[in-house]
Image (cartoon, rainbow, N blue to C red; front, side, top):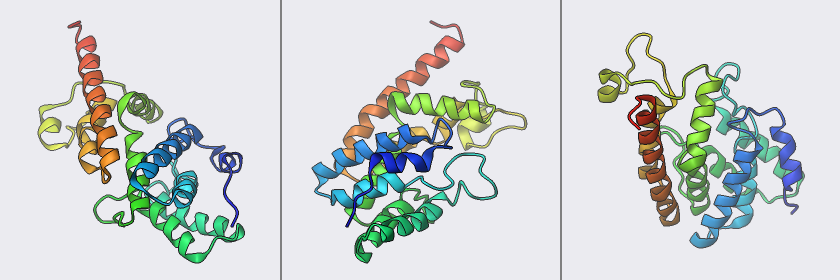
Length: 215
C-alpha cells in the first residue's frame, strides 16, 4: 500500500484559486494530523483524505453545480488514486467517507467515523481565526464583494439580504462563520474552535469600528 506524497498532491491543486489552494490543503492536513493523533484516529486514512478532500471542483465559480458537488467528485477521484496505489477496499471506503462527509450540511453524509469527524473539524477550523478572516475577505474579493458592508436589519434578523445588499465578508461571518464552532465533533476540535472563534469575533468588531471611524 503506497502513501500519497505532498508533492504528488500539490499537482492536483495547481489551478486552484487563492482561497481553496494547496496552502489550505496543507493547513487542513497538519490540523487533521494533530487532532487525529490526540483523538486516536487512523492517520493513514486521515492523511490521504486531507490531501484529496478538495481535489476536484472545489474552486468557486466552477461550472454548473461543481462546487456544491466537489466532495462527491473528490471522493470518486480518491478511489481512482488509491486503487492505483494498492490500497485495500475497506481503507478506500473509509477515505471516501471522510471526503464526502467533510461538506456535511445536514442533508448529506454525516461524519460517523472518528477519521471523518477529524477531517470535518480540521477543514472547518480553517474558516476561523486569523486564517479564517483572511480567507473570507479573499473569497469576498474573488466574488466582487467588499470586505465590509453594513448589514441590514433584515439580514441581521433573518439572514436574508435586502435587494441590492452586498454579501461582504462580515455578512459571511454573521451568516455562517459565527456558527461554526458549535458544529465541531471532536473535543480537540472544539478546543481549537473556541480560541479561533474568539479571535474572529474580535477581528470583525475591530473592522466594524474602523470602518465607522470609531477607533
